[in-house]
Length: 120
Image (cartoon, rainbow, N blue to C red; front, side, top):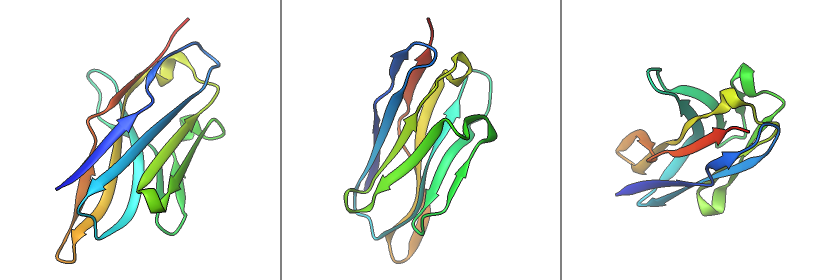
């Protein structure tokens, strides 16, 4: 069984910073990519940032230059460094991993989400 556990959310003032962490654990054969998505009430989940095993990154236009995604492969951990936070960044942030738990299966796994609130 694969689990993704996020941490690091909280309340921060505009202009502040947070670092989100996501650890993938359990039976993992290989990981293709890990990433972060955000969701606000009444809206669909949207990509914030993703990082492939080869090192390619993809960012939403709204976070380019402010957020950075990084990964510790040996720990199956992905981070989202969030700087210059704005009130519109307020959302629940979900971690997603595209991985193989065994050689025969490849699928997406999601974490439970962590709330980020940017408010003065």
